[in-house]
Length: 263
Length: 263
Image 1 (spheres, rainbow over the protein chains, first blue to last red):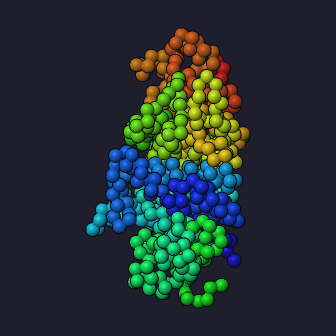
Image 2: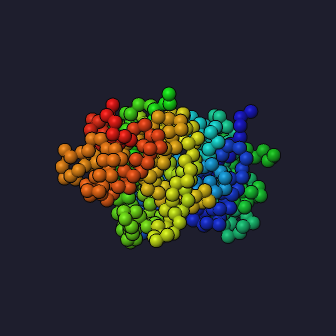
Image 3: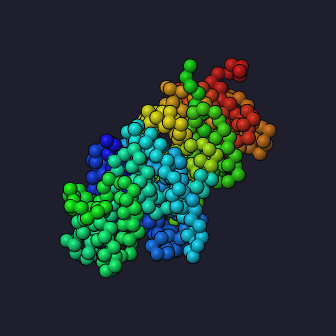
């Protein structure tokens, strides 16, 4: 049997709330065995961008990354947010090592081709270097990845953190039994965004399609769940989506590949 | 005999000139065997600081690091500069991994006590975690360190890059025969800053003291050379100070511990 590995993705809203972040990292730090963290940081990047007089440009929730915006996201994700997370994990006795995709050539990407939209310096993941990650994990280190990749030719690229988490999870299934957690500011995937009790406990592709059709699951949740179901289909052992407390209590949304009775 | 290791420190002015940086990294990337890079970034940090409306405060060439300035140096050193260097090294087929002192707990520091001057979030190195570095080196990775440390309690700190290079060099002498290079914008330590032919080829403590007394070696060179001589005294095998070309040609300044005839 493969060794279990916990892959934990923390969203931007959690990153910006010190207490929330501390609790999420505390939960993560206490997970047993091998683990990997992935974090976003888009909120802070947009803030920093405005402070520098660069108005953030988005298209369907995705950042248009010109060269000035790329500098901002590299600074904020790989600098400010990554080192904050790493130093907090170190204080929790979790021997974290912060990485962008360029470090150890962990995430090789290619610049997204220009079609209707020119996303600029946005990268689509081409290859996950599981050997580098395995080496770090075997040395007792906990990789903490930010959402910056590179093309191997010296160009850094901006990649969605949810996508990175899914790609990592899929690639790591070769060696590990991967459990993937998407930790964000809501308790889980909800039928009513204003009702904390409306968390969908189990979600399979059939239910997901139905909720989408009814407009109950919409907007930002769709790319997140598309990524997550893709990972589940590719062999990721378990996927949970929700807030730190709900995840700890096992009350977040669990994705199911079939409608089989949950274990 | 211990395995040789090349420890290469790149200063801020080299970092800000793309061609210079590319050539310096090309030289570094081609050095055989184990190697470690350390880089500064103060010039860019001061620039970014002003762009954000924070006037940089310096005392005798050292940055007074309040919490806003700390955010700037973390962003610029660990984000912008570190990832630029790492992605450029990757393009040169050098498998670099960017690190702050918090990553892998590589550099533990303590906040400098307030005496006449309150330097703010400035850290003095307390411990170099050579085990983490050794693991990375053995895995064929090339650590690229920026000048950010941490206190192990979740606080990031700003530490002078020349000092980090010296501390790393000293700690690594336990396992390696360390060759230390300080690569900066001048060909070497010069008797006349405007005359490229005035490089002091060999410098020992006695000559150094004489040049200081005469005011020939002054200002920023003094803390750099103090650090370097400290490292030489502590067992670092060789130390060269100078520009990329001069280093490559063996025409930079070599520090000597005694006035013995150079080999």
